Amino acid sequence: MSTTTLSPTTDDTVRRRDVELPCQSGDADLWFADQPSLLEEAKALCKTCPLQAQCLDLALERSEPWGVWGGEIFDGGVVIARKRPRGRPRKNAVA
Image 1 (cartoon, rainbow, N blue to C red):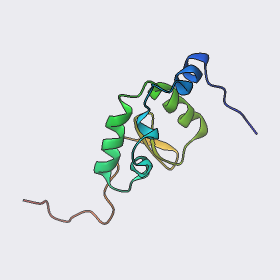
Image 2 (image 1 turned 180 degrees about the vertical axis):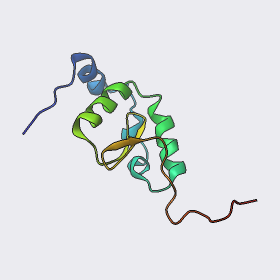
Image 3 (image 1 turned 90 degrees about the vertical axis):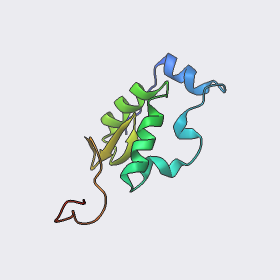
Image 4 (image 1 turned 120 degrees about the horizontal axis):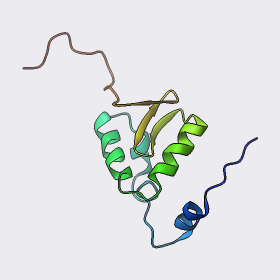
């Protein structure tokens, strides 16, 4: 079993009550949504977080299986640029 130790700066930031972390307020399901537009919304919220870089580093270290971590989308333990919508792609382009 491995343990992860946060740096003193990160640990202090997490303990402060005046720091609002986007992932700890509002709808937690947003970070694990199926809809690409909701995942993009979560990514945008991550950009405002003071722990974004640490969150991404730790998610990569843990090989997070899915969700938005540190402003990136994880799918199958790998960072992907965008999530495709569910279902089969259209044969013909929409006009």
